[in-house]
Length: 289
Image (tube, rainbow, N blue to C red; front, side, top):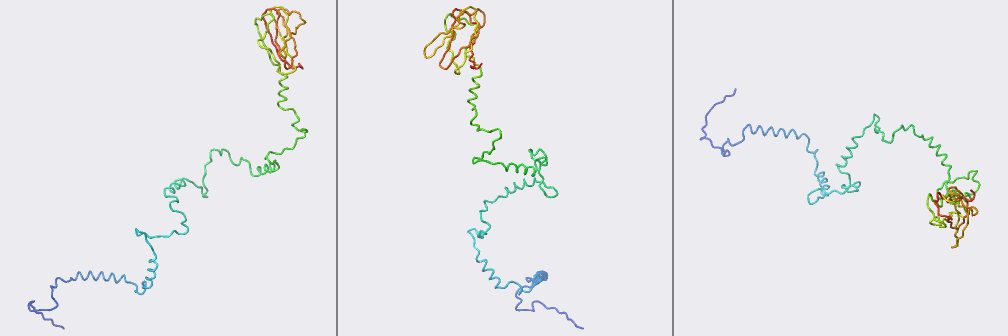
């Protein structure tokens, strides 16, 4: 059993050389406890051996690589274009462009087999199954493959059985037009209910034929009896040809005469008395009529 003896020491009676400041200025128990807690925490994090950390050689090797890095005036890392970055990035689609494309592709819909759902376009107005099949088109092609063409890509056509002579030997359009013109009567002069003078040209201008030779068919009717004469001019010379054998035409009676005319002739009519020409028609008709 230990015996402890209490005694009082007056601070005036003790002098320790190294206690040169008041003890109250030193760290308290609480402060040291807090430091210990921090130290313990650090020790707990030092949970591996130091020899497992990077060696000086490893760090030097890393430094030898980082020393190769270069920077611009703004301390931005200088990077060489990689091989596949072969065009300027500014030429590539921007984010807003891709967003715009995405906004359209987001509208696409798909069926359960991930096939794109497509609405019938306006012109697809009947079922495709109602259109020609491949076999039908192949059959058509087998026939069109038989066609031949000349050097100017004109279809080569065999003469049909009845095309037994060259078409160039047949009548041309102009020939047929000429024939047609000669078969159609042409009105050359017309007077109706008009007063005329005796022995004076009835028509203001002579009448000339469209074809040669041809007939001028003359229809006349006067209100007075008189003799009708044809006045024919050719090469500046005019002659008289008296109709109806020189006999008077009866008043108000119709008469018709055919006068042969050819190219170079010009024709007019005169009546022997002043009268009213009730009707006069001069029509050019083909010689065969």
